[in-house]
Image (cartoon, rainbow, N blue to C red; front, side, top):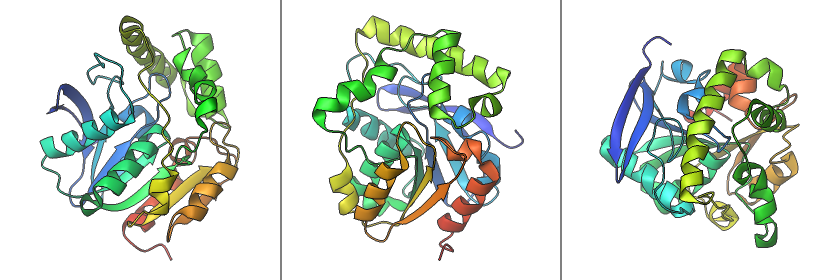
Length: 270
């Protein structure tokens, strides 16, 4: 992709891999916890377009892509702190946030805990957590029990996408598979799956920055009904739903997503 550069930054204890393109106001794009995911893999259809009007940063969160693996069991606050440290390392004082699923959870916490550093927030396929504690392990099981085989990755992507065959060409699938083998190899050495699912709906209810929910009508992982609940409790929020779409609206319908994202980020969505 023209103008998109690949870089590393030391964010706290983690050497952090990221992609960057463009100039102007900052946009931090945070990916999901799909096995093998990363900044470029999830936002490859968006960075260059958004980078024509913004400075876009798409890092790999802890343990994903080429960012350092965790050396201990981590909970949600560690991922939030890591991204704040990443912004500090790059000298970013204020940014818009675009978060997909897990990246959305991180985005909610950054916006709630550091509202002075956040402009606008786009939450893709995100319901703000809200999973009862007794159901958390069941919800995490497809991620925690994943092993890096072609069959397992295919099964996961078929849950995540409305049409997995269309939106994960062979070369992209192979990158997911290779990255997931590295990621889960580190988890095996660690002896655990280092993530939880916090309930951030109380933070959504007190949100002070503009929020746009973008959700897929056929989202199997975070059903649209959950997005509606989160939308309904977030002050001043907007909701945009796409048909024939699962968890990854930005990849499944990139032209439509890019258009609505640019309109919202520029404050022109009425």
